[in-house]
Image (cartoon, rainbow, N blue to C red; front, side, top):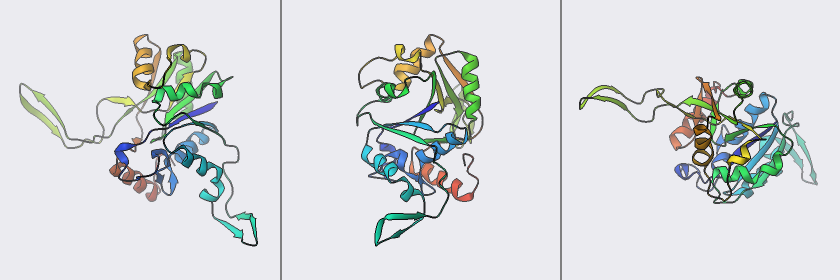
Length: 258
C-alpha cells in the first residue's frame, strides 16, 4: 500500500522559522518533519511513498538523492572520494520514494490528481499532510476504512487550544478557559485512507482544487466520508511556537510519534 504525502505548500505562516525551506523539510530533532511522518508509517509496515512536491521541489530531490550522507555519520577517504563508510545501520533500506513535482501553485486536491498514475494497481492508499505528527493507530485507520466502506476516511483529532475560549450566554461570559489543552471540536488531522477505485470520479480537473473544499466536503454531503476518531497525540507545525514545542518533545525523549 502506498502513502501519499502532500509536500508542496509554501508554509507562509512559519516563514520566520525557515525562510528558504519548504515546511515539510523543516527539522525536528535534526531531521525533516516529513522524515518523521515517513518513519511513523514505516513502523506500521508502509514503506512505499509518493511525495507531492511544489515549492522548492529541488530541495526534496537533493535530500533524498543524498539521503545517506544527510542522515547518517560517515567517513570519506579524500583520496578516494567515491568511497564512503557509514557508521550506523541503514534502517530505511526497504523504503521506496517517488518524488513528483506537481507545480508551485497547485492546490492540494489537484496535487493528488497529478500523482494518480503512480497509484495504478492500488485498491487503497494512505494520504496525509507533510506537516503533522501523531501517534495515531495506522492499522486502526485502515481497518476502520475497510469496515466503513466509504470512499475516504479521515482521522478526526482534537486540536490543542491556541487561544482562550469563552462560553457566552445572555450577553455574559459564563466560563473562560485560557488556552485549553484540547478543544471540544475535532478537525481533519490527515492520516487519511482513500479508495483508489472510486475517488477520482469525484475529483475534477484544474490546478485550483482544494482537498477540503473540493473533495472532502462533497464526499461528506453524499455520505462517502468516514471518520476515525483519534484521542491521542496530534500536532501540526504551523508556527515557530509549535516548531519549538515539537523539538522540545523530541529532545525530551518522550515524543509520542517516536
